[in-house]
Image (cartoon, rainbow, N blue to C red):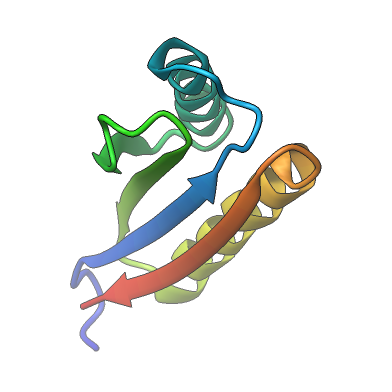
Length: 100
């Protein structure tokens, strides 16, 4: 790949929250997770799936860089951070993808 060619990192977080009893409960978890990723890793984050279900959600976080290895490190650090913080309370499936 040519230097300066952009690479997009996509982190997809699918989770099940068995303790959520309402959309309000789930949205509090989603909001906390989104804010944590934005604050710690300076990435764009959106809820991209299951918005109207109260125990499931999919979040997508993206970042762009010209350095593939550095971007992979950031994506993997985000995945570890989410797993360490939320694995006790949520069932989580995380996928990292580099595009470009």
